[in-house]
Structures are given as C-alpha cells and as structure tokens.
Length: 398
Length: 225
Ligand SMILES: Nc1ncnc2c1ncn2[C@@H]1O[C@H](COP(=O)(O)OP(=O)(O)O)[C@@H](O)[C@H]1O
Ligand SMILES: [Mg+2]
Image (cartoon, rainbow over all chains, first blue to last red; front, top):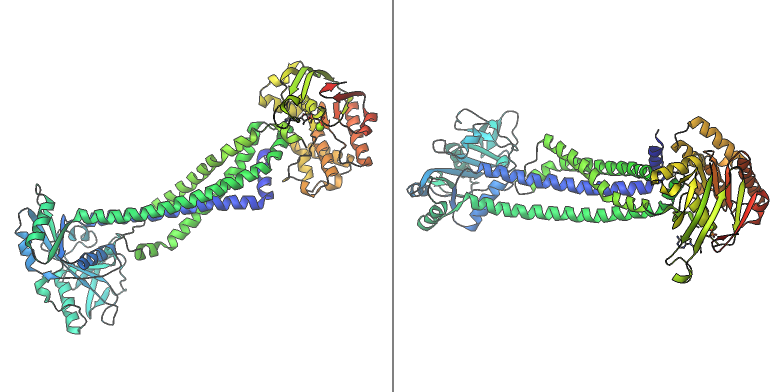
C-alpha cells in the first residue's frame, strides 16, 4: 500500500475519538441539510400540485370566517368539512357580465361511526358543467361516473371489495387518483347526485349536522372568467350583489398559502442554518485542535524528507475519509428518517406536502453527500495549509 | 559529496530572542566543512547556537546570508521539493526534540523514511531489525511512541535517521535522556557509520561524546572555535 495512504489510515485508526467526533459532526450537518431539503421540497411540491388542481379563477363560498377556514381545511388536508348556501346563487352569478363558466360543488364529511367506513371528505361535482375536477379525474377513470360510484383520493383506504360505506350507503370505488399531497388525497369524488343521496341518508339517520334540503343547496361555486374581463371587478360585483356569499380570487388564496409556506420553509431553513453553523464551528474547533497537536508530526515528516505535497496528500486522504464517511452517514440517516416520517409529514403537517419521487430523492441524497464531502474539505483545507507552512525548525526545539 | 557552509549569517529577532530586541542571537560569517568518514563534534553551552548550525547545515533553516553547498550546489537554491528529496535520500537527522509519529509503531516509525523513498519493504525491515537490536530496543518494535521512555524514543529517532544509510548524519544531543550503556551504544553506532563512510555531525554539551569524535569544535555566542 502507498505509504501516504497507510499513514493516513494509521492516524485515523489510532485517533479513534477524534475521527469519530469529526465524522459525527459532519454527519449532523449533512443530516440537517438533507432533512431540511426534503421537507421544504415536499412543501413546495404540495403547493405546486394544489395550484394545478385549483382550475378556477374565482371561488364563491358561503360568507363567514369559519367557512373560509373550512374550505382551506378541505383543500389543505386533514380536516373534512362542509357548508351550504342556497343554490339560487348559481343563477345569480352566471348572470354577471364576464362570467364564462360556472359550476357548483357539493361537500360532505363522513363520520367515524358505525354508519361510515371512515372519516372522509366527500366532494360532489356536476358532470354537466364541471371544468375543475373532471379534467384530471378522467386520468384515473375514463368512463362516466354512475350514481353510487366514486373515485378515491390516493390516501383513502379502500377495502378489497371496492365498497366503502358512507351513511349506510354502499359506495363503489371505481378508481383512485395520483397523489397530490393536498387534502384531495383524503377525498372521494362523485357526482352531486351521489353526494346528495348520502346527505339524505345522513339526515334520515339523524346524524347530519344540517337539515338543509339537498336539492336546494350547493357548497361552492367555481367560476371561469371570460378573457378580457377583470377578475377582481367580478369578485367585487359578487360580494356586493349576491347576498350571503363571499367570493375570492383563486390567486389570492394561493398567495396566502404561499406566504404561510414561505414562513415554514424560512423557519426550517434557519433551523438548518443554525445547526450547520454550530456544527461547523465545532468541526473547525476540533480540527484545529487536532492539527495543532499534530504540528510535531508534520515536522517529523518534513525532517525525514516528506515534500509538502506528500504531507498534503496524507492529510487530504484523512480528510476525504472523514468528510465522505460523515456526509454519507448523515445523508443515509436523513434518508431513513425522511422515509420513516414520510407518511407523518404528508398527513399530519396540515399543509400540502408532496414527497418527491424516489428517483429525485436518491439523486438529491447523492448530490447532498457529494456536496457535503467537497464543502467540508474546502472548509478544512485552509487550516491544513496554514499548519503545513509552519517552519520545521520551530518544531525541532525542545 | 562534500557538505560545507560559507559565510553563513543568521539572526533571530522577536520575542524569543533574548531579553530585548538588541540582544538578539546572531551567527556571523561561519565557515564549516563536514567531512565524510569522520565524526565531527560541536560542543558548547546551551544557547550558543549549536542547533541553529545543525539546522542550517541539514537544510531545515534558511540562513540570512551565505550558502550551504552539497556536492557543489547551494542547497537553499533548490526548491522545497528538491530539498525535501535531498533530506530524504542523503541526510539522516536526529532532532534535539524526540519527535515520532504517534500513530505508528516503533518499527513503522523507523522504516518510514525508507518506505517513503520507495525502497524494498523486506530489505528495509531487515535493516530496521538490525538497527533496533544494535541500539538495544529490538523488543520494543511493536510498541507505540506513547508507551516509550525518553531514552527509548531518542534511540528510535537515531535508528530512523540511519535507516536510509545516509551520506550525512546530523545528531542533535543524541545522548540526552540516555544512561551510560545507552550513550555507549548510540555513540558507537555513529562512530561505526563514520567508519563506513558517512559524515557524522554530533552537536552536544555532553563531555561523554568527546572520546568518539575525530574533529572537535567549540561554539560560543554563534562563533565556532
Ligand atoms: N526561532 C527562534 N526565534 C528566536 N530565537 C531563537 C529561535 N531559535 C533559537 N533561538 C535563540 O537562538 C539561540 C541559539 O539557539 P540554539 O541554536 O538552539 O542553541 P543550542 O542548540 O546551542 O542550545 C538561543 O539563544 C535561542 O534562544
Ligand atoms: Mg540545541
């Protein structure tokens, strides 16, 4: 074996504690960076997918602050909800100038009770006028949905039989959707008629929170604005002229989500940065202590005729080993952590979270490990150069 | 090849250099030849400049002026790389402070300069065994420096300086930390190498070394006497 490599390995082996501390510190850096990356990219992915799914320009729901929170809960996940307004608003809205398309949606939440398989969000759409749900629903199920049939979000538990029970109605799940990372993953989609049937059944069972006549209410109205018309004008008109409703631009809602998201990612990033800086300071501290202790050893090697280049090679070998081992452990541990907390992040965070595909996850892991190795090398090499420039004569004296 | 100093001056300034800045140590116009096949001894009290002379001679300390010639070439005009290779191949240096690689065993420490030079490992190991037993530390070859006494470490340093069969050996206080028997073994070994052709420089304040020397110098305040 090469003498320099042998020296490097001997030094790593002989100074187990030092090797261990440095490796652990570097792995802490890589761990936090990679976990931070996974979480923030999952948040951004969820946001993007939510934007894509909200194909309306303007959304109208019943007035009241709680209603807006309910609506966000439905979209962002975790909190099934429902609310209703008279279906007459649909006609009122479609009369407004500049409204190109309107469609109503009908929401219902199932319960964790005997009558229902599980707690779910149920979203009904009108197949005749819908332009929001069907464009991407048809990817999962090309045929027309029949009464009593639904398509399930990716995280809805569907038994082998394909039948779920909602308010004592047997509902057939005919397809399931791709993951979106949003509340839509915990939602089943059916025709409005199917959902009304469920609501009636709930009312009959006496477990419904509303006694509204299903045929006379809707939950929300989605609007597509004709080209050339100002969306905020239409929002204002609706808010002024239609009683008991609130309208807002889809974009405004996305912006409000985005700012909340930015808040979270900023927090995560600062936490990661804090941990990294702390760990780096400790790395540098441990490393310079170690280099100082080894000034003498470098002196010995110079005395016996090692060139500076050879000395560098020795330290470089050690550093590459420590940095690579640290980065790799950190990233592997982060990957294990991310994967084991994946479902927790996706479901419990309360905001859209879409995990990257495994391919990009692995790529990310590889890049992080490599970058960790290279950057920690760059961080430490200046100290090596400084110590190697100490005159040999100085270390020879007693 | 010949090794000699011509008109070498060296001044130390700064806080280590005596009581005040004017009293800094200096070595002026020193001329000195280290002869092959001879043991040259430089004695003098502590602080007289012996180690400085040795460092300059073996290529570890650049003089302020004057030159050090090896085989007609001024060694401080070589680049760092060339000088390092010269030290590795031709010089064996025993520093005043016993410095060993703490992560290597005694045997590995001694063999290191030869392996670095690319020599055959088997032959180097044999030579190392000879040197260690000659210095009466053969039984310690598997130990780490942390497990050695001062005298044992010094002998390891001496063995290491001789592993490459150097043309010149520079020994700074080689008898420090040694008992009578140790001194005898070390000095005889250096004496023998000189008989075999090496130029040996011993720098010491120990009167015991005198009887082993062919040529003797005294040193005082940076001057060779
Ligand atoms: N790097 C240095 N900086 C300043 N003064 C030094 C340095 N090295 C040695 N000296 C001074 O130079 C003088 C000679 O030192 P040295 O050659 O080691 O003497 P010796 O080996 O004879 O004891 C001493 O007074 C010492 O303090
Ligand atoms: Mg000295």
